[in-house]
Image (cartoon, rainbow, N blue to C red; front, side):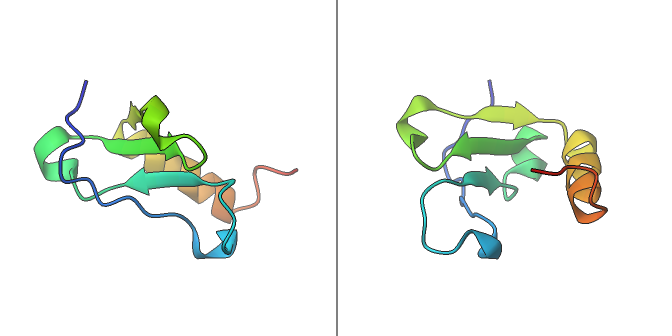
Length: 69
């Protein structure tokens, strides 16, 4: 499991001021080799790590409209 020490968590600017968001930390890629992801409503519950290529594909899919509500 990657070490989240020093993680800088951020969320989408489209999330507004709400807390129903996914937060990501990409600043540890060099050290941990993963993008860290957690639920902003429950950061104490931990995080999961995603391979950077998988994260890039996911973000690309979001941008291309592959996921709909």
